[in-house]
Amino acid sequence: MMDLHDFDSVSLYFDDACPPEVAGLLDLAARSCIEGEGELPLLQAYLHAPEQLVVLVGLYRYYFYKHRLAEADLVARRAMVVSGRRLGLPDDWQEMDQIALADAASRSMGLLRFWLLALKARAVLALREGRTVVGQQMLEKLAILDQHDRLGASALLTVVGCASTVAAAAKP
Image 1 (cartoon, helix red, strand yellow):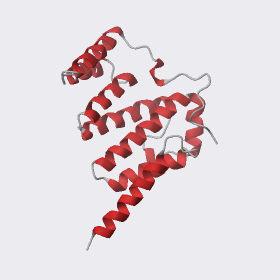
Image 2 (cartoon, rainbow, N blue to C red):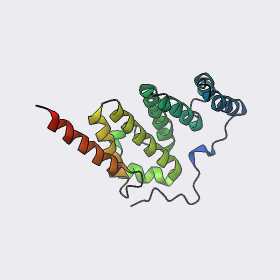
Image 3 (cartoon, rainbow, N blue to C red):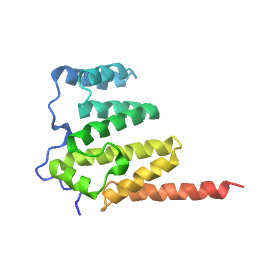
């Protein structure tokens, strides 16, 4: 059983060198977000470096905090594709299993944790958009993969279970 808090001598996902023009665009986006105009520099950074994880995180946060959940989900999905490809993970999160998890952990525990957090983000987005079944399925997969529950899937599953019970009780 692996512990997702074990980061000894592993590279984290932001260790990739960020090209100077992309770093400049990210800095501009951060300053522009205060005025609500950070999207353009974030998109420009994405066009320059579509596989730079720090760019994807910036885009995700921008869309999430603007309550543009569909766009945030697209970015989280892209983050899973990019990180999953680096880790040799299956394209479909539903095909992820303990063998793939262990293999990915041997490559980069930090990047694997990033992939799992992107899955959790997508689950939360699905729940917020009313796609309860897929959100619950994603959380259940996360709970299976994260057996120590370091990422908190079980608490979210409890909330989803309570919400389902309330919704069922409210039906005539």
